[in-house]
Length: 316
Image 1: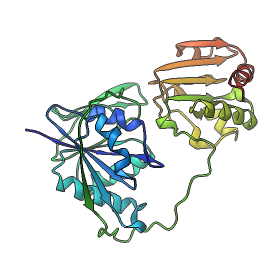
Image 2: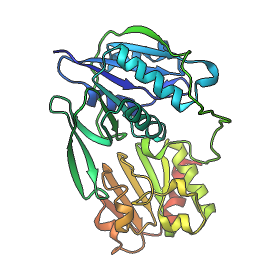
Image 3: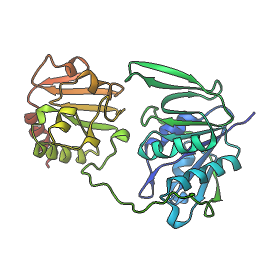
Image 4: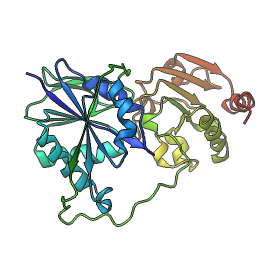
């Protein structure tokens, strides 16, 4: 029997986020129809990209202008659309917006939820995610009419599957939030231009960066190649960068293709947050630092001296 799979699409400034394509690839199943749910974006502008990865139906959720940023309204609208299209599994990204939206959907529907998935077997209803700070993987068996699944960004390599998609609309403008009201929205005050959990390349600074001024230089280098900037707990505790940049057991869990550690020792707690990186490159004066043994390539050198040379090469 053909299944209908729903995929919540995240966009930024009218463009689909690249991390959506790996999620769509993961969600594709034999004889399944893929429904892309789009909110607060021009669906026509996303159509070509979504079709190229196998989406069969693009559903635009129409919300009242004053409710676009209300998470309760968005969750209820998605639930109604899921029911209307007889969706058996809902996929979303384990990003900040996804972590806000997916648990709401699961709670309101009484549906099982697994976040940070790296693999999903829809036939067996088993979702795979990491446990105990990445020390092991767990295959979680799910029961329920509808499954809700958060996918770890960059966990799956995108594979194109050209298709033709139908465009439909779903009116959610009548939905109310039952007392939940958004008073104000705005952009966060941050230097980073790239979300850490979505970045394909990350520059991570540690004790060896020595100051916030040196982190500013790291940002400049990272921006030239569209990389994210992260930090160790030492750098955060020293006040050089905000906590939102911390990677590790008590910070963000990231999964980039390339992770470059600048003057970072690589404690067990930090390694727990980036151990799934595709390639790790370490720069440290201490050849016995833990990060060296957990890297694919390393340089025994002062991170600031290497950063200065990189700045010259990038002509910043």
